[in-house]
Length: 137
Image 1 (cartoon, rainbow, N blue to C red):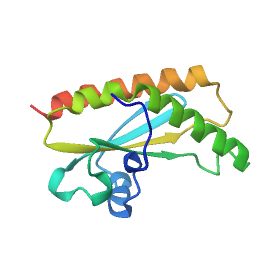
Image 2: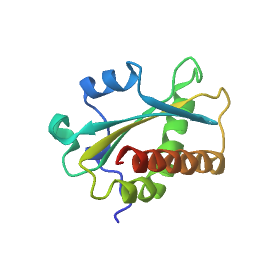
Image 3: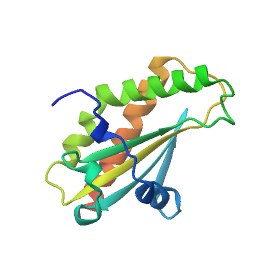
């Protein structure tokens, strides 16, 4: 398994993002993040999702972090934690007939350290992968 975070793994389809946040999708809170995810049928997946089972969006609201430096730092922390632990979700997605769109949204007002973010991302990915197992049944 390659631990790179390629451009093709980033969720950038406006249509999928709108569907993801429209409501009715699964969500769970793992401090300091909220994870929103939904399955995307292979035939509805945009070309940008080709070759990857999971596409990720990382959002840090300006309302929470007023300075761009802090927003960028938080995004970097989440991106790095996801990159090193994405195997949890990718292994669960192996052999599935759908892809996943996942969004990490920051919910804290203070900048956490890397270990807190990594712990939250691992817990969130585990929850999503358990949900993938139940979706397949």
